Image (spheres, rainbow, N blue to C red):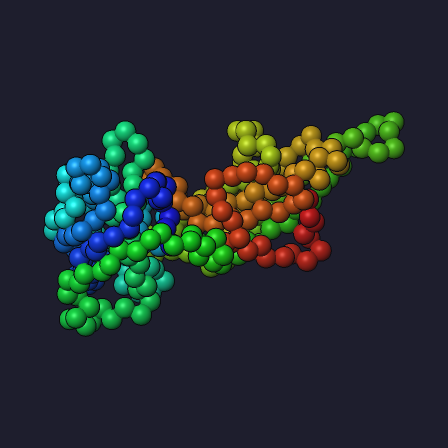
Length: 293
């Protein structure tokens, strides 16, 4: 599964990469030792050379916190790195991770070009085997369809939605009303930073993506089952507006100066464009309290 942006279609995928992985118990770190690549595709066909580097992710984290990369080796199809990429993570959480290692050509003026990738499922990896810690050559593969993150369940959200008409003196039917969105809690959120989590929920009513449409809860730390009990109120909605509106709720992990996307969902009759793919965080029904917008 490829999770990054770039140019995937222009270059043939060929060659292989040599690397090894090991878990350092004393440091609580996963080490990815990237040794070298050979027989890579040439981004510069005329001169038969590329400027390759290696990038890794610990999936399902596809953000900046989960990305590591080597230095760029210029003008070669057989780069040597001998570099260790480190991830601070508890060993038990590696069972839920996949290591995605990809090779790229660095282009200063255009989008970087994809040269191939390797993916290892760490759920069944034998960390105590000496053979598992040895350097191995892996053939580079083409980009696979990015479907896993889109269909994977990454937790549940318990919420309620309600439309409250505003009374209009002298008129039989109200002309506008308020949309109330009560976010009570989430369950079983994924851990992307070992045992650390500091989650909050953002809300937008599409197709309006302006700043006034964005609201959020407070951050709740140290739990994968945060309780928010937060109500967001949006006013000025006509009954006919509800047929076009779509509530977009996303869950984030706040860490230092960055926010890492955990999952999200959409509820409503309307549609809208966004930068994220959903179906990864399931709503938990509140029975009679849940009213569809």
